[in-house]
Amino acid sequence: MLIIKETEKADLENVRALWASGEVMKFVGFPNGLEKSAGDMKKWLERIEAHRPNVNHFSIYDDGAYCGEAFYAIDRFTGRAALDIKLFPEARGRGIGRAGLIHAMEEAFMNGADCVYVDPNRENERALRLYEAVGMVQKPMPEELADPDYPNAVYYELTAEAYADMYAEEPDRDSESGEPEESGEGREPEDGEESWEPIEGSEE
Image 1 (cartoon, rainbow, N blue to C red):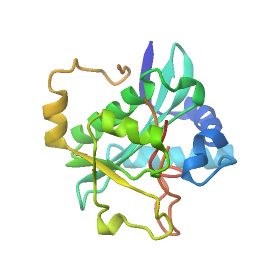
Image 2 (tube, rainbow, N blue to C red; image 1 turned 120 degrees about the vertical axis):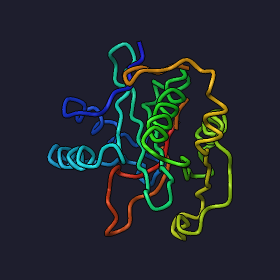
Image 3 (cartoon, rainbow, N blue to C red; image 1 turned 45 degrees about the vertical axis):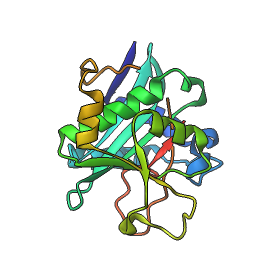
Image 4 (cartoon, rainbow, N blue to C red; image 1 turned 120 degrees about the horizontal axis):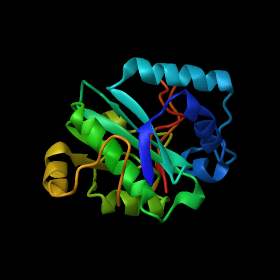
């Protein structure tokens, strides 16, 4: 059974192992993975918890095995929510990433986002296919999100209205389940930016 749940202390070692994987993190600038201490992870989770529901992080399990993470962060000034999904390689190609991404979109919209977006590396073709499969549309990069240090980033978004039209007839999911692919894109936060994730984006 697929379970998508709010991340808590018991999940931190799994998240830490996910971030340490070079295969998972290669498209976000960490080909050898991103190592974090247990203390770093504890502080990171405390920041997430303090800012819920504007920000939230979810741990994904299938038949008890940890598969990866999903995440959103709403910018209250623009109404946009950044999304991220990352899975271990063995969890890919089974519909888990799609379920995790849709779950994060649902939660973001329920908590006030006007649209959700990702800014993946254009070379991550698997991630691009996932975003297009869930209905996200490529558009010009908003000026405030453009970063000259990440010229390969592309921008995909889905509005709340388009989401409602697209998924109106899908069965409801509770907070611990998902149904049916996968993605880890984004960029490393600049100095002074709040770091919710090691990066924001996706890896399928």
